[in-house]
Amino acid sequence: MPGNIYGERFVVVSFGESHGKGVGTVVDGIPAGLVLSEADIQPDLDLRRPGQSIVTTQRKEGDVVEIMSGVFNGRTTGAPVMMMIRNLDVDSRSYEAMVNTPRPSHADLTHRTKYGGYNDYRGSGRASARVTAGFVMAGAAAKKLLKETLGVEIIAYTLELGGLRAEGFTLEDARKNRYSNDVRSPDPELAERMKRMVIKSRGEGDSLGGIVECVALNLPVGLGEPVFNSLDSDLAQMALSIPAVKGVEFGSGFASARLKGSENNDQYYVDKKGRISTATNNSGGIIGGVSSGEPLVYRLAFKPPASIAKKQKTVDLSKRKQVELVVPGRHDPVVVPRAVPIVECCTAIVLADHALRAGFISPVLGGRGKQP
Image (cartoon, rainbow, N blue to C red; front, top):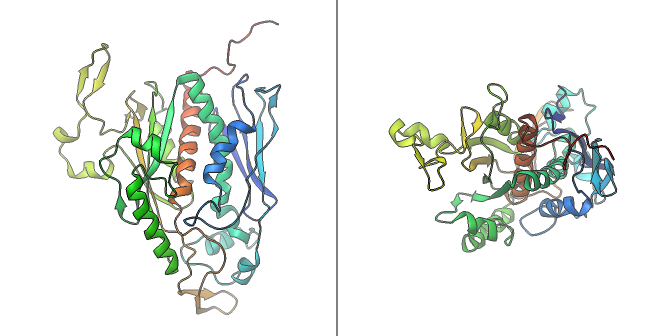
């Protein structure tokens, strides 16, 4: 399958470049009958929009979504839904100046080599985080579909930034606080410390990495298609499609490597409602590649943005010799805050695809096959 397509039943096609005319998505497989409009998509786009605070790139884009097809009389028709935003605040001068000096740890050299120099390098082209706006459009529709059909709620937040890690918070804290501060932390006091660290790093011409944690509630038992399309493998594939993600872990994750089975196993019991549950959730809500009914919990590690204002060594491709580079232009000093809504939406895309595969969501909402 081509690299810009994801999904089997909820199929997402990503298109556009950072400095092209626009970016967006085509989603095939949204069930007919879902109430959907730009007003359902725009709030999530607003959360990832650039230029909102000092901890993000200062590129100013309205990111106003347009639904171009697949919705009629306020409801999805069952046809592909095409959504896009226009690129308006485009300044490619700094990229023209760097065309022969690839940025360390960015995609400049690998994409130039792979595509024979025909790639659109402006604003990093397809390697730009701007393409994730399309992920958010598709994911916003998926979130609404999951919420209305299965009652699924997805909550992501900044768990760690620049080595500062949130501790001792509740899921309710995350639900209430994550979008009330610039860094999307569940702890408002820690958020101020994180923000000061980002400002300091930016002033030094540097960047920071961090960790986003995501929780999905009210999942049915049985999402996932082992072995190659298990729920965790598909979530990991989608997570690693988000620019700057370099690590993914579920439940106890890498910490489980230091535990005994007796410490890591999620032991079963019967709760007060007669349901079989687990005393712990070290599996992160996925056992054997299938959702267990417990909350889905996973974390994504984001590297520091590669575009920094400090001097770095690179190679001048036209002269084949080593030179120094200071990256000009407008760049995020940390991607984690803007990544939080992206992670929520990417999670929703995978969950919606698997819910449709497993038959938990009908291809026509509100009944099928009824004659008018």
